[in-house]
Length: 276
Image 1 (cartoon, one colour):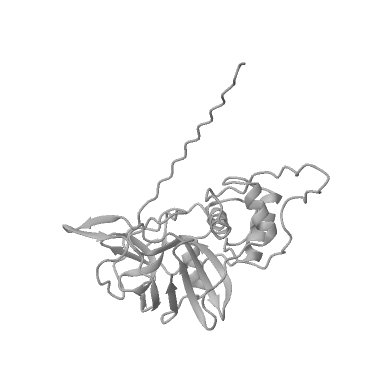
Image 2 (tube, helix red, strand yellow; image 1 turned 120 degrees about the horizontal axis):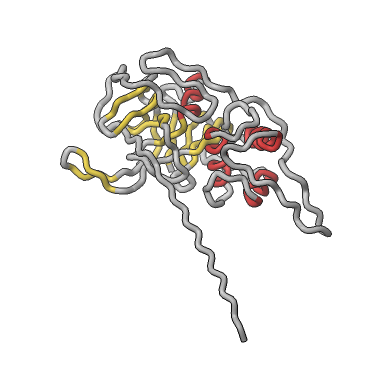
């Protein structure tokens, strides 16, 4: 008997630019070096020393899910995969659905850029799916089901940072209002000035104690508009926010997202931060 053996090999590779966190004691108006790095999304950025850049505002959106509904008597409909670079009505419907569910992705414009990819990462994390940033059948199903993470806090305003799922949530009185992809401490060891440190993001309840409206040129890298909540650990913008832990301890979000958080005053000083 002849046997046929089919071997499929799939290789994926991902790399992250480590932005780092502030291991020193930054002054209120820290140094502002080179201009803002280019951002693939539509969110504006500003050169160093410039006034706070404007950011897109997530608009209200219809809650209709994307893609056709499969009937029980027929084979499942084939839904078009959507990924970075796609454009058109399907992308606009995706963006509207993400916005309606609370996944921040700027202003829907029908173009699948890095900001939309960040929102897809967040949805995939909440749905416990593979984090590839591509909207395939399982991610379509998560959209249709309306998958959203639940908050832990029950009253007041909180920024919640979920280390396991790598999500940053804006929560008001127990209701999750906005959901962001984040990348926290890699839990790997690194060296600085001859000393070895663990790149972790400590769990606990904190408050935002200080902030810098611009670049902070910290010993471990550049931080965009950081909001410090635990010593030198902050929520800050970064050019690279992968779908996995990759920082020295801070909670990274995209530059576009950080601009939006500042322009809407979503994380003012004294805001409570719960890392779990």
